[in-house]
Image 1: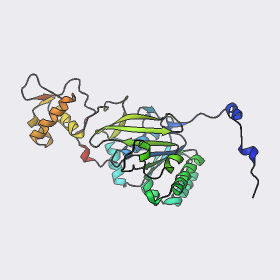
Image 2 (image 1 turned 90 degrees about the horizontal axis):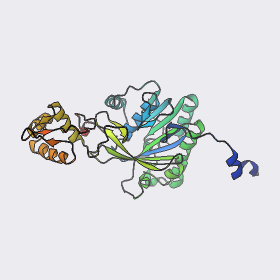
Image 3 (image 1 turned 30 degrees about the vertical axis):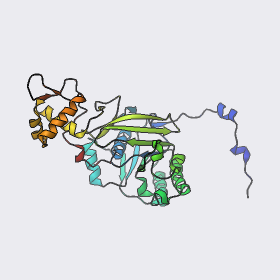
Image 4 (image 1 turned 180 degrees about the vertical axis):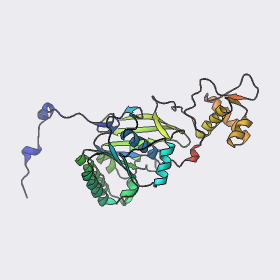
Length: 332
């Protein structure tokens, strides 16, 4: 057994304090680190894949901000969209009003387990221009899942991904799901063993209640302070926005309510429940009840000039209303 070279592996606090280290680099300022392993977790249909394609579109140079934060670094990305098909990706890009460029590279199939990481390492060796890789989802490249996977085996697998990211000086984002059993600590809900928390540099958890556009993005990282952010989904463009940047930051907005607001706008800003119901193909009584609920949130109000008519208040923020309901798109 060779002798350990203690002189090279042990340093001092004084030496560390006197050394000038490079500052942390970000792809998206104070959100997506330039190097390391990031886990993005959330329940099914919360909008994780929408968030990812929006991020990748920004990083490849199509927008200068993401969730209101500055995109600090532009470059080539690799998206392993392993739960998608090319037609579905095209549909998503069209709905998100995106025009991906040649730096937005995509694969819908990949190898699994340790070979998946070896193949990724080989690809990155050949393509050093790649600065960000997204694996969507972990279950598609790691066949041994859940309780069947021991802490040590999962730590080893996630650790290999982190080593790959560190070796190439890039960021790797792994998308995964949440456990069905809730916890007081949202990060304990990340699917898999607690090894993920130990091995990853950054954990992001996205939650969005059904039929709501308001989401909570919980963040914990070695590179920035732990925090929660409110983000809002525009049903018009299927893109996420920060509370500060957005006209879609409207709590309690649902697809049905958006549909009614759209109908009111199309009908000149004032209409009866029956006219709205006919416009959107819903029952008159259902629409009348929805209008009453919407009035309590300030989305609509009764007309002071015409009995039985409803209007859009001039102060109403419609949250980028779409004519399409949430049911028209298969959220990921």
